[in-house]
Image (tube, rainbow, N blue to C red):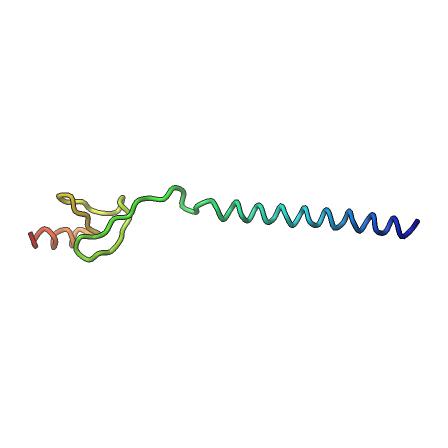
Amino acid sequence: MGRILFFLLLGVALYVGFRIWRSGQKRNADSARASPGGASEPMTRCAHCGLNVPRSEAIGDAGRWYCSESHRRLGHDRR
């Protein structure tokens, strides 16, 4: 009788341990899928130096994108 009870409790403990481990795995997978900064944003290349910058931070001029005001002026002077 003692052996049956031992193996029954061992089985329950293994089952509970497996469920706890599995829920931790799912939680880690869900957090890895979520992007840290929210939605991604399109990148654009600077027409002067080639640096990739987010479109919201880029400076546009006549259909060309620049990473800074000084590069916009340099690109504008070139034309």
